[in-house]
Image 1 (tube, chains in turn purple, green, red):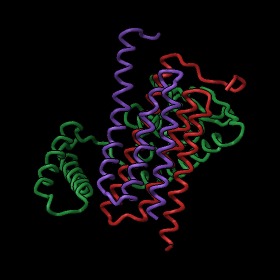
Image 2 (tube, one colour):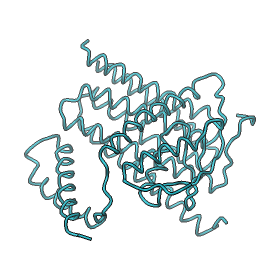
Image 3 (tube, rainbow over the protein chains, first blue to last red):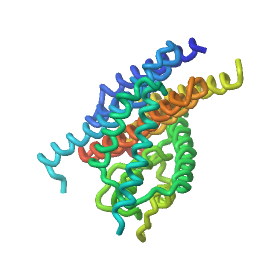
Image 4 (cartoon, rainbow over the protein chains, first blue to last red):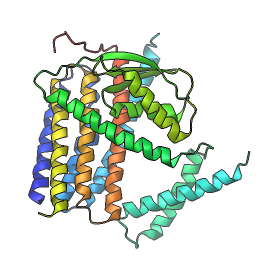
Amino acid sequence: MNGMTLGLALFLLLNLLVALVRVSRGPTPADRLLPALLFGTTGVAILLLLADAMHIPAFVDVALVFALLAAITGAAFARRAWREERETDEPA
Amino acid sequence: MKPAPPLVWAVIWRTALFVLLWWVLSDGRLDSWTVGSGSVALATLLSLRLSPPTRGRVSFPGLLRFLTYFVFQSLRGGIQVAWFAMRPQTGLRPAMREIDLRLPEGIGRVLLINTLNLLPGTLSVELQGRQLCLHVLDEHVSAEAEVRMAETFLARTLRLELEPA
Amino acid sequence: MSLPEIASFILLLAGAVFFFAGTLGLLRFPDVYTRLHALAKADNLGLGLIVLGLLFKAPGAAMSIKLALVWLLALAASATASFLIARRARQHSIAPWRSGEHE
């Protein structure tokens, strides 16, 4: 059973790496914001699976903090970007 | 207008919530409550300061119905998008749609635009006044029906009146 | 294997399938809006299924609630983040892809 959750965690890690490579190539700036979503879901899932596979319950706390930070980062990131936009070019 | 009872209830509810949260975070251990009780008190005070209690009350049957609807719809949404992603030809027919919201301004609308992102085929793009701009995966499916449904469930949960479209 | 173990196994596996579908959508979908659909919906369902699968193995009530809390926070994070990214894309005048164009 533990081998299985470890295997799944590695599979998701591979998914995350492929996704990050894809996202880093853009093509638009908005594409490069997608990791905010990826870490909030895939990253969290990997941590939860590792907590089970390696019997380290503290990883669940790490996952909790990850999810919390993902929520805050996502909002802060795009908010700041808008403010800059509004200052430079206010669209009609 | 009676300002006292809502405050008392807010204190009770929020304290209970933070006690539960601390219990969860400390994995149910008892030796952490010296720090815990202080944290709970501080969190309750801070929450009252940052978000003062309002008169609006949540309907629990409404919330339950909304959650059931939400779980089933997000299941449908996930399956739909997975199907688009895995079949040989994606067959996407995306389009932009503009819809006038019927929920009044405030928390209801915020919840709605966030909920729609997890529902099948809809993605909130922009909200200007009451006009919501949506990106849909399949232009042949009525996004409006989806939005109206979500609005109805949210309105019941938050005890809000829907405005005429 | 006992029944809860089998249920857990199936849920975890199903979760991984949806994560795979989300990544596939990210690679195959033509623009940032459709890619957001893929990530927001498939990955969240994937995480939901994995949390559900792990609930079957959770040692106590505190851990179960903690797992559910992680999922709830992740849902909120994806929902706001995908709205904000879509909005930013539109303000950058990134045109949505229409069927008939090259993928």
